[in-house]
Length: 297
Image (tube, rainbow, N blue to C red):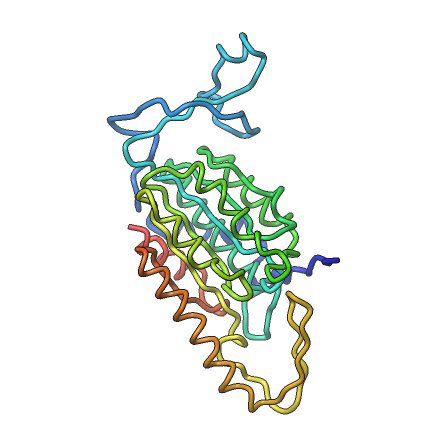
């Protein structure tokens, strides 16, 4: 039975204010709005979500069918932003040098990107990769309210997914994006990429089909990057319930295995046209947001 891991927000709280401050410092004109300009076409209906722009409510459907639905519009290139944040238990780790837990750090980056998208007039949605996070998804939509919904989802979600025990965790989280993200959409995945099921890199890279732009950010704690431990110690995995007793001599083997994992992800993603970025949770989230915006162009 999984027990949700506590999230150490450290220096990264409050999320809403941090994200707004970062977004204000990032150029918001990275891509054209999907709801403005020439060539706008009707793109169908979807169920109304509280907070959606009331201008797009289909009143005729309400009168005829007693259902609240909103009209969607699209151009030849839909610049919707889809955020995927890893909420598996390994993301709860925080060492002494990090600004916060990996999940907290990725949440700040994701919320700041959402704010940038909203400022650009583009729709944005959120998927949380983790068994306990499935109900916390935020459908892609536009308007200021979607930023608040994304912040609320990130703050209220538990970090309790176990990707070792749950081989379908990646596929389930990506399925809504595969169904709904159109050509030109931007998909940003924020994860440590540790303990994900075999084939996860291929599944994420496949999001780039049909003209989507995929950016994957590997976010690691400084402890995971340089393995600063000495002496004899015990390591317990946050996923898979594995415990190992070892010493500082394991550093070389660990760093070699990490490099192998990272290289495999980078090659799989770049081979399919996706962008790959590496980051530390000691880094300034604002710098990473700027790097993602540049990579997504």
